[in-house]
Length: 351
Image (cartoon, rainbow, N blue to C red; front, side):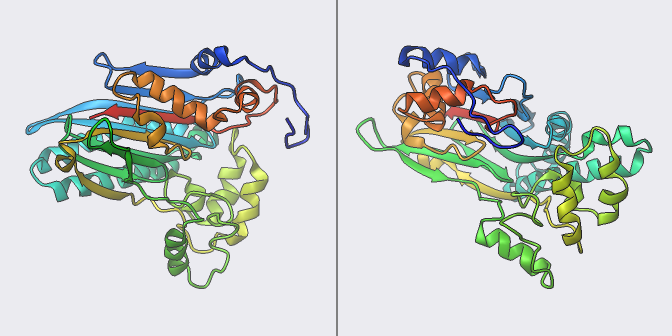
C-alpha cells in the first residue's frame, strides 16, 4: 500500500482468509448491544497506536411526560477532548432546557439548537478564563455532532446535526424493498447551500471557502469547538499556536490565518429536523446514525431485526472494501506509522 508523508511506503499487511474477517473486524471494534437486542453502538479504528477520537452517548432522559431516548455521536477532530467535553456537559444542559418544554415540540427543537450553542459558548469562556497555555490545549479541538432524541419506540424523533448521516430505513413487509430516508444535512464546504451561506456572510472574502474548506482549513461548516475559525486571528497567532501540545499540523493552521478576516466562519448553530414516526407504525423500521458517510440501508435491512451485530458487521465490511478481501485486509492491518483511516462510529436501533 502506497502512503503519504515523509515515509511513503509501500507498507506491508497480512492477507486474512475470508473466514477470519468477521473476527478481525470485531477485534478492532468497541461494541455494545442492548439486552433486548434492538440497539447497538460500535466504533472502529484499526490503527493500533491511534486514539479513537469518536465518542457516542446513549441514554434515557426521564421527563414528566415520559422517557426520551437520547442518541449522540460526537466525531472529534484534532483530538478527542472536545468530544469528551460534550459527553460530560451536554446532557445536563439538555435536561435543564427540556423540562419546561415537554409538551411543546417547537420548544424541544429550540432546546436542541440552544444546547449545542451553549456548550460551544462554554468552551469559549474556558479559553478566556484560563491563564496558563497548558490549560487550554484541550479546548483547541473540535467535534461534529449528530443527536437524535425520540420516544421509544415508534413515536417522535428530533435530530440536531452537524455533519454525519442520520437515516431511517423502512419497508412495508418482508417481501418489500427497503427504503432509505436521509434525515440529516451535509454540513461540509462542498455542499453548495452551506458554501453559499458562508459566502453571503463574508461577501468581500473570495477565499472564505477555499478548496471546499472553511476558510481553507476545515471541511466542516458547523461544529462545536474549532475556535481558531471563530475568534479573531490574534488568538491563533498569540495563543493557540503557542500551546503545547497544540495543533496536530501547525502549518495548516498558519496557512489559513491570512484568510481569517471576519470570524466566525464555522457555525455553532445546529440544524434540527422533526420526523413523525407514527407514519411508519405499520412498517419495519430502524434508525442508522453514523460518522464518515456510512449510509447503506439496504445492506443492513435484511438482517437487522434478527441479528443486529451481523447488520453492523455487514455495514463495516462494505465500508472497508466489501467483497475485496485484499482491500479489507489492508484496511484492517496495514503496517503504516500514521493513521490511515478516520474513526468510524455506528449507532443502529430497531424501532
